[in-house]
Length: 236
Image: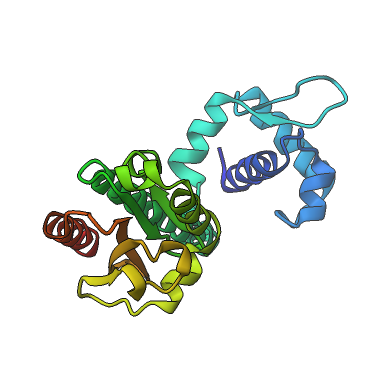
């Protein structure tokens, strides 16, 4: 295969990869791959066909690469550097989406872990999302305080479903474990509850993670459990 034929083969394969349509001589001329006439290209295509690098699906069609043609292309004519800028741009965009999703998954898994350690509601604000994720409500509502006081139970449900994000925005939250007990709580619906909360940070984002339950909660156990899980998030 001479130089012109090799460049023609590469052009046919590049076009076919892009369009999935058999490639004709007119297409090669119009795309400016080779500065020769259509007749010359047709002659070279015929030679490439005879050598088994391309084939014609049917009489009126252009040419498509064969397995032999692709093997030759990959071995000798492919130019990955041509695509580096394009590929890197797509990679960076998808990588960011991937990392954001992984950050969020880490938070979900941390909440699930902490839920298995305490019989209270565990919650976390989710990086890059204007929402709060929580688990453990069903266990919390089995506590005697909520069983005997349906109004108190409905109040905690209302806060979790619609107002917890606002509550956390209004609270002072930092790297320390902070406690909002009874009437120290910012919302009247949970004045009979306690909130234990701290800040965490993952790559490119910060959030709050904490425990919400009755004032009778085990503060010592919950403090240590929350600190361990938040530290796990911070250190990755």
